[in-house]
Image (tube, rainbow, N blue to C red):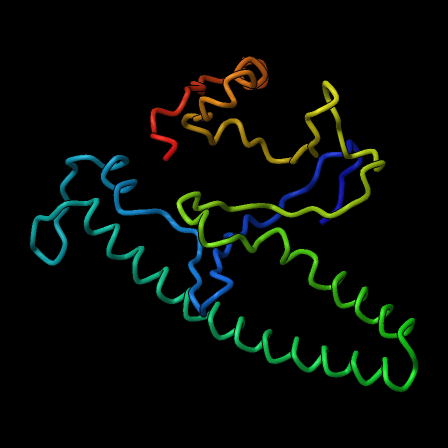
Length: 201
């Protein structure tokens, strides 16, 4: 991904976070839950194969098939990555034995740099309810496309307008002091910023 002439980041993929349990083989890809289909589609009905049914239920079943497919694809890729990572670890051990700790450290740092994007997509399974997706842009903090406001808001501009695609923003009660900042950012679009009514625990 690169920055355009006006320092905005051009289109880039949104990627699902993966929630892993470090003590087992459990993983979960970020995804919508069934409730979101019913909130979005409400009581709408459709006719499929001559049968009237809930559109929310129909869309949910299609989505479940899709999620099943990408979960299977992820598992296959994840299993391959684990095998490759073990081979790299062995090779680093061999390098340390033959060429010394300094060369092994270089190789280890190189492997970590290659895997760096994964660090931002893998989260602990305890946070599974977040169902987070992210765009990743790795750069130096002193690059011109990186903006810092008020000493605490650090971001890069994304070329396609995100604001027009928002329905609503929920913020946690503990983050209420940031509401004015969101209100300011969204002043030219009709996107309400509300404090979440969901329980914290």
